[in-house]
Image (tube, rainbow, N blue to C red; front, side):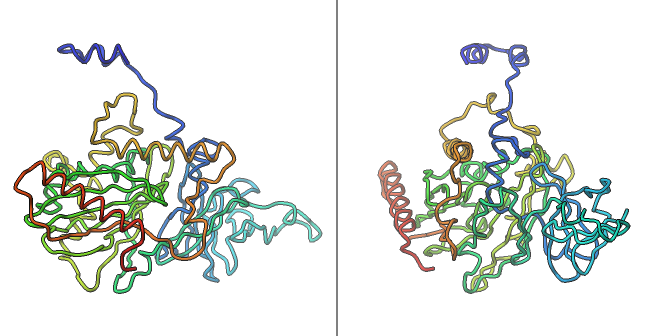
Length: 422
């Protein structure tokens, strides 16, 4: 650390920087079977695809470093099985969908959605082969247009989590995403706990009010953590909170909010998972939430959810107006944290990484990393919101900053205590 600090104080010190070759944080970033991070992630349910995509052919997918096949049989049951047939290794992406399960195209072996071998044609009638073998498979859940899986130890499977935002009155839930970023999931997800970047990276495609750097705080909550960003908009105090539901799900308040109209606990516009496909590829997938009572301008909604999430614009245009994709992917396939110089604005990023490492330690120590509310069945309370109160500014700038902090703290305490409409 001393050597790095020394060369950074010298002019034209690129040579010394090039010599430094710090390693990636493997424990935090690797997701394959048997890795610390991979075993932690495998304790949770993850969305892996869209219900609408399941048709008359299987879908080859890669999740947490494993190659798998996702399919729906003719009985409308969804299965997720290991890619290669246990007989001779032919890929089941070329399998034939059956009334019950999937059949390997090579020799006709048939596998049920739980991995049970139903048929081994060509074998003697008295063969016990299909009774002695099982094919690798994972439980799945088809829920509101997304397909989820649990890939951890069978005896550790938690209840499927249903969050309160999935059943709000007057809200429409719509599957969104499937975007794949060629980089590690940590650098994708920690972006959600950085309320300052919105004032720079998103100052054009969000609203003008987002251009104000907020006062902010980071708080642990029952599901993980949340940031509280407080801005003044004229005579209003705007308290905005994005939450991180561990390990890889965040809910964010609307990006088309202006802070101009008072409201209490306006709910999220999006629920978004960053699902690791492997160590260097991540899929963003989740739900958009549409408030049917106060529908936004469709263009503003699209700008807040789609703009800059993929390299779908000319390179020069992306240089002139970058998006999240450009900021996150340009860090490299896996960001090297030892090269960073974290500042006070990165307190949320640091807390997120600590929570992931805490979860990894829990698994290593034989514990359960699932947040307590997720271990119980039923609707799970969540906390992302916009709350806007009409509170005129103090004439003294310092006093007004104190006022903003006080309002943000009071609103957050009420929300964590459950004092809001459900």
